[in-house]
Length: 114
Length: 113
Image (cartoon, rainbow over all chains, first blue to last red; front, side):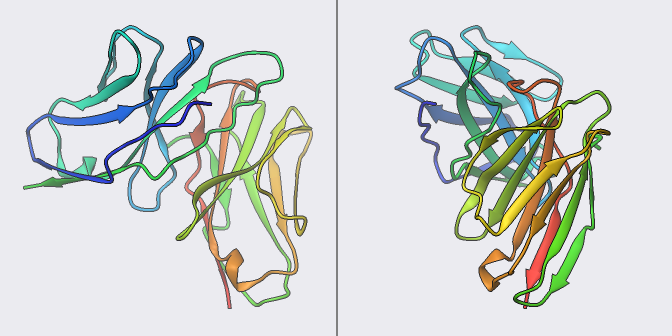
């Protein structure tokens, strides 16, 4: 699975959009980008994933660059409850011999401030 | 609420002891994963089971073992506990063995004194 690089921490004002970057320059063509978050020692929570097209769900949007070497997770209107560690994970989706294990890096600690 | 349940929530024990952590996956999920989160190591994958069979192993110590039962719940057994085993232990589940989207339980906080 490709390695990801994320800034260790970011701040965001409440109500504003939070844009969390992730670099994955060695990503392969069959690897997806996943985002999870962990709110203060709770179990990690799935947010969104994508392959090459931009994706949006009720929680966030995922923007993947055309060369797929980086992506941005966007929380459109951050609230204090979005304060968490955000993990960007790159991995193959399906395939024989593959497992579902997730490899977590250090993530980005997002602090949403009032 | 992810639908994954873990018991107990907290566990305090002494060095050298043995404990069992229990996980019930979401209804319909066949795959169960165990992760350990300690302050210095972050979130680390330990082991995966799929429909009762071991599917993948990560950085799991020989003192640790796991199994998945016919009703698909899983147990993680930790023996000869050391101070360094103090950590949060998370269970996650997914529909298939290679399913990307995993749903995590609330975790068991283990403190070894």
